[in-house]
Each structure stands twice: as structure tokens, then as C-alpha cells.
Length: 532
Image (cartoon, rainbow, N blue to C red; front, side):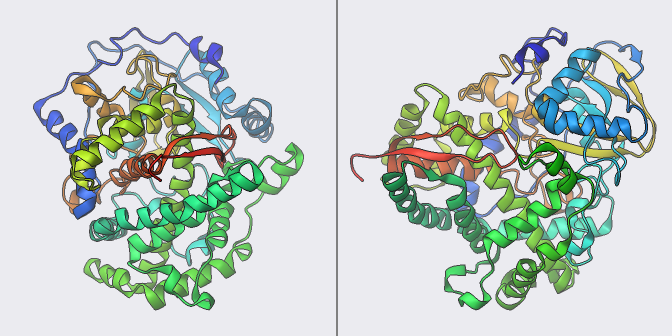
């Protein structure tokens, strides 16, 4: 991270790590968040509605013009795109502009832009302004999931997926409710299936380390999480399916990538990378075979999961296409980004592996040698470590919304007038490192969320397009927001990931996580536990 650039913005002074007090209602929500482990041994809890954890401003802020701009037609968007991907990189792109304008709110072009999308955005880099991207009274989320563009509907059977719908859309309510119901019914399946697939993956990593000196984490995890997601979401064991009917995780990873490459870079030489990925959408034909096979597989074998859709007045085809999106793009793709983030920070935090190992093994031993919800709930350091990884690098780094009315948006130190129709882009990476909220925000502190004060900070954990402490309620209220339906499942599986590692190994070492969109890494060492 370009620390000198980030620090050159003059952040308002605040009582860091203790910014906002906690009402009794918020305390209740915080306590429910720490009990997420037990819920997945019984059933998955639903997503939640958005609350307002930020305190009201003590005084009226000065109204300012939004700094920045979009440059000349065609030239400005192209220049910004090249700076974003090739000349400055994503971090440098945002930090240079934050320093230049001395503001966490500014105008800029966001990729892909010319010649096929309108790239103009107002970017929000502090936590106070960022909250506007999930204030549904002010913004509309229609077609903003991927930013300034929407992939061809051919990728999803000609249907607009739940992720691209605004909560006010009746179809969104039905689809989000369907997803939440699937998560609820899947609850008891996550832990045993995750244990089974991790156990089968350990020998693969160990063998490759012994023969090659390293083993790709991502390539093995791709198949591991594919099987976990299929089993948990559909109750189908894909290993028991005839090979001729079995979909491929590689094909579906390609399907995901082809939709998102317009806002990514794959490391090719800049002219080739830009020409191939950012000047025109890549065709669905490149992924059709794998997608169609997945569709037929679900229709043939996932009757239990598809039958649930009838409760929400969804037809079978609509449910199948959305089930693919929930399971593969949202779930599988998200975990392939999140697990390397956990490994990255646990690998480099001095002494943390030993502390995690001791806490995990002691909790299981105290519980009679059984890993269950009670044991997981007692692993406070493991929970805090996972939350801190989500804070340091949110798996979805950008969230977008379009203003549906004129309104005044506030950062910590200024107010800005937003016009109806303007695109807002929330940079979760920076909002999660807001020094007004978090002490030493660029330092990974695995104990940040421990204790009473640490639990209060969970209201500022915003990786899920909402707050970690918003009230977990019924499917009806949860379906009226864009907060990630797996808000509780993601940290739960992050915790379970660490538990599985340190039950099996004393310690591990990984390669540097590549600073690109795949977050690829490799195991260099896995030291078996003495009892293994």
C-alpha cells in the first residue's frame, strides 16, 4: 500500500477504535453476531436489514463542490482506465486522487468505460459517505452489481439475476427469499461437508509440496469449494453423479471470469490486456458448454433445492439460473478470494499461528474432543482474526448504486450535493480502513474485535454491503436489502477453515499472495501436528 499517499489526506481527528457508543439494541445485535458458529450446526441464519450505526453529525458540515472530474470525452475515460489498471494500479489510483483533492469523495471514471459504458462515478472512500450505497431511500441498485456495466443476459439464461435487481423489485424479494431459505435449510450440511473436503485436500497439498516444493492453494481450493457449495446448497454429492452428467468447476470459474473481466486485469501486456478485456464484452459462447451442463445437472439432480422455489412463486428455470449464480459466482467465487486473504494475514502475523492453534485445540478438548457450535463459539481469537481479515481486504472491494433523487451526502469533514441519476461507487477497501473509525487501520490486528470495545466495532464491519451487526430478522425483512445473504456464513466458514488447518497442522507457510484479482497463493510448508 502507498502509505505516503494515503496518509497525505488530512483525516479528521477522532477517538479511534472507540468512535461510536453502543445502544442496548446494538449490544444485542453484537452478541447475536458472536453466536454465528452455533447457528450453522443447526440452521443458517438469514441476512439482515440495514441499520444506522453512525452517530448524527455534531454540527452542520460545509457544503462543497465534489472535487475531481471526468476529462475530455473518450480521452478522459481511457486515461483513467490505463492509470487504474496499468500505470498506477488500483491502490495508487485511489490514493493519488484522495491526496490530490484532499477528499475521500471525488469524481473519476471507473472501468471499463469507453467505448461501451458510461464510466462517470462519484467515489466514496470513507465509512460515513460509503454508507450511502446501501441507503435504499436514496439510491437504486438496479444493474449496479458489477459497476458501470452489466454482462450480457445470455450468461444467465436471458434473465436478470437477483444481484442486479433493486430491493424494491418484487422479483428481488422472491429471489432473495429463496436464497435465504436455501441457506436456512443448508445449515447442518456445511460443517461435515467442509471437513470432508478439507480432509481430502490435505494429502494433495502435502504430496505436491514434497515433490515440487510448493502446492497451489487456489487450484485445489477451487475443486474443494465447488463440492462444498454443491452439497450444502443442493444436498447433492457430486462425486456420486455419473461423470457424463457432472459439471466442471473449471468451466464454471471461466463462466464467472468472462462476466467480470471488464473490471479486472489478468496481467497480460497492457495493450493486449486492454484490447481484449476492456473494449468489448467477451461472448457467452466461450462458456456456454459448461454453463448448460450445470443447468441440466441441477434440473436433473437438485430437485430438493428447486422445489423450495415454489414457496416463493418462482418457476423452475428462473430458480435454476439464480441457483447457479448464488452458488457459483456469489459463493464459490467469493470464497476463492476470501480464503487466500485469511492465509495471507495469518501467515505474516508474528506468533498468531501458535495462538490460534492453542485456542482451537483447547476449545475442542474442553468440549470433550468434539467440534460443534459450542466449541466454535468459544474461539474468540479465531472469530476476531476472521473479522479482521474481512476488514483488511473485503472480498468484494467495490459496491455501486445510482442516486434516485437529489440529496446531500456527507463525509467526515464535508457535505456534497448529489444529483439524481449519478453513479456512486463505494470503495470498501478504504472505508474499512477509515482511521476515524479504526486505530492503526492499515495494521492487521487479529485481536481488534475482542472484548466489549472490539464487539462494538463490528458495527463498522461493512464487507457484506451492510453492517455486521444489523438485526438478524425474518426472511421478509432481509429480502428487502442488498446485504449479502451469507453475511454470517462467510465468517463462519472462515473460522472453520482455520480450525481445520490447525487441527491438522502445527503451522504453515505460504508464498506471497499475488497482488492481482485472483489473490493466488501456494503452500510452501505444512508442518503436521505431532498426533497426525
